[in-house]
Image (cartoon, rainbow, N blue to C red):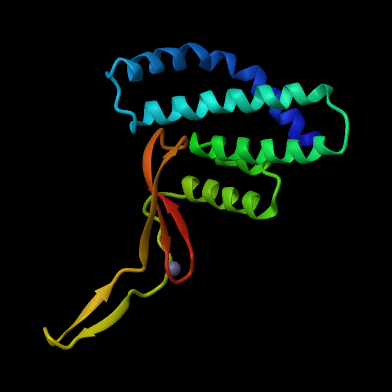
Length: 170
Ligand SMILES: [Zn+2]
């Protein structure tokens, strides 16, 4: 918990420099100059929500009692989601509280860092098309989501091998 709190406070200090950028981006969304699904708009929204969560974490500094840890855990989980939305998967994995979430963000960090052309050794599935009387190849790669990758600096596709589970962001 102390590790999470320190990381959160560090983020709180660093966020000010993003503020100007965010305001300009907000202005462009509000004036219809920016597509709300664009990278800029998504990052701006996530940053805005991150700020609100960090404010709530800071406010809890003065709170005592049994519910504090529970509330902090919820806020850290939310913060980890917002960091992941900004493509900051390593930070997200450090902030997340549950093991599942930490593990998932670690695997996303790995997926972003490996070369885009990385593939697994799984053989594609072959199925026989009785009508066309020929064999068809079914790729193992499944598209899971379009996400922002800080490593790439742009929106990328998260893919997963149906067979071995290898994730790649490319
Ligand atoms: Zn595979």
